Length: 348
Image (cartoon, rainbow, N blue to C red; front, side, top):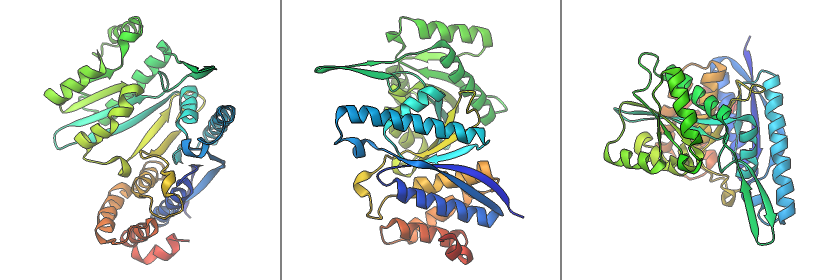
């Protein structure tokens, strides 16, 4: 009898429905080949992207942004209440998304490797400029955001635990924090210094430009844990992918972990690329990142051993074999190379 695993699926406008179909096909196929039945629970709402909202009036944008955030937060809470541990989300409007990340205290985890270096990047999505709220006056907008000691310590605690899971023998060779801490009256420096003293864990708090200079001049030691404010990490992510992961944004997925106790244990998987609204309906959106997210969920949450490596091999072959540029052709070829005899069933 097949094991049944429940997974969440949240869909945004743009190419979201097309990528959701890719996710469903690939995850179902991987489950079929490993004796696992994946029960996908879709959010009943299709969330807006920036482009789907841009022609609305200011008041409507503000209201819809808040409604989408409220709905997605509640959906995540309901998944957690059902003990669901994974949700795949296509791109949605960043303003709504960061309201949820602030409320549920999200961190983004990315492990980037070269032949001699591993970088564990932990992005603090729970505080800073990307979070907060806006106030409007004629010809003026004021954005209010906050940092807190509790959230900072929670982010660092998660990062240290994640690093020791990755490197159980020695832990990281160095721990860096990249924040614009000179703008915070010395408070962040005090929090990190006190935490270092209490835990005995050396943490080096750096300005982002210092981290950039060191990357250029010295590179990184073999194992580096880098905890970063989103103001720097979001912009630098593409550069770090290229330098340490050898990857492009369009092909990459990441995971977001919620640290709020109400949803602890729920991990959200996403593509790094945006909603690609201009490609909607053309069957040309790149499915690679979605395929990789499905493989990660299948292996880490569904017990499908070896799914990630198997999918990577199939992706390599599919990209080599596929001469047309359609999304469907690439996924069809991928599933052919995974298990040719079950392709027709996987495409149901």
